[in-house]
Image (cartoon, rainbow over all chains, first blue to last red; front, side, top):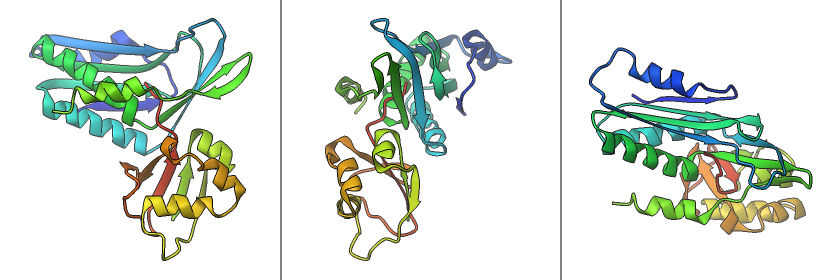
Length: 149
Length: 83
């Protein structure tokens, strides 16, 4: 079963991989993706993430369940932060474990593609010019299409 | 019905949640958005661009033709931007 956490606190990537590895020797591949707060042009003061408590956890678990149905995963962790974050801070962590690398790579990409278009989070950027909600990208929707099979 | 709003929808409506007694003629998400838009200028402005709105009923993403009933929790929000 996937481990899903929606939290304000930071996470330790290495520690989370170790936690997934602990006590098992059947997994030969661990893939992790870490998403961080990006400051493209040096103007970002902070990024605030709002979410829909309850639905967020349900939706992440649903996405993880779909990944487990499609690939032979031995473990899966999704951690997503909310609250106000600084440039460079961690936002999201996805870890997949499988016997072989291909399933772990593909499942991690699938999880991120679905998370970006399904998990109810909203980003608001604070810059010197004021605060603004981040617009959704259409290429995030396009990224989903390759999984429609 | 419990209504919840997020991100700029919440800011434009001016509240994060409210309770609504659903009129009998409102049976789908599309009809609900139309009904809310007719309440006053604030809702009309907040919900002016339906193509930029997404809706969840009882914490599941739905389309505009999804049915709604008075005991539902309906969330209205912009397209998500997590990750």
